Length: 180
Image 1 (spheres, rainbow, N blue to C red):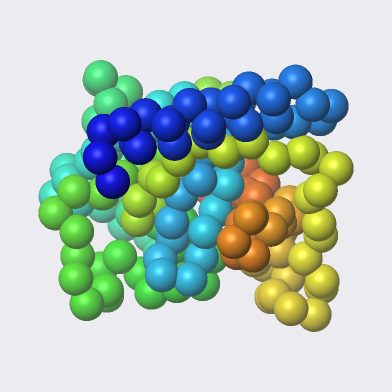
Image 2: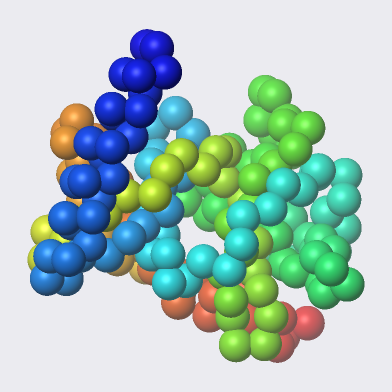
């Protein structure tokens, strides 16, 4: 694709994007990958920042659940790093065939501190109408996983996009934080 075609695609996507923003209940979401098969969404109003974090800079904390990789420093603030893929049922970061040199962390704000959700890749910002959010059928996923998801959307290519329930993830980490 040449520059002119790229520009036309951008203009088209911006027109669609602008139109969708003004629709009733339209919300902007950050789209990210949790592996080859899982695509997640996070409402932009929950997003604080996207960081790149080398795994060697995540300080492990003993006697915490495996989904908590430890804490990382963000401008002098200790931030819990959650292996979101593992929390969703995938292989733990330390046991994957290829451990990334740099991890992508989506920071969300908890009441007292930010929490980093490690994802494979941040893809784009997309707009969906909340009235199109569908619940996951209870029998399709384990109940522990269902509590971390609000539902799903289906994109234009027919792919399922899981909407994170950020409040449940934050509550899980904060409850553990209080217990430590």
